[in-house]
Amino acid sequence: MKKLCYITLIGWMLTISNQLMAQCSLCTKTAQQLGEGPAKGLNNGILMLALTPLAIIGFLAFRWWKSNQEA
Image (cartoon, rainbow, N blue to C red; front, top):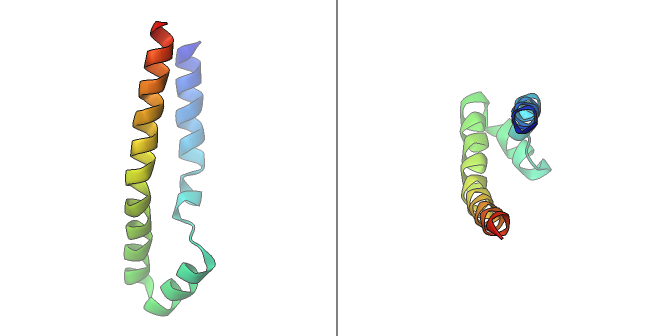
């Protein structure tokens, strides 16, 4: 059952990966003015800035899950 959940989760993450490159409206206008190369750099910068808070939240959720699993 766990294996099926993991496979489903990975499949879901792969299908929405195109949506991860979306931007807010202000960033989209800025990227359109910059051109193709700098726009990709802007997208990557936005994703890198989002990675740290998401990693912290994921770590805290994992620790919480582990502590409740042992009880």
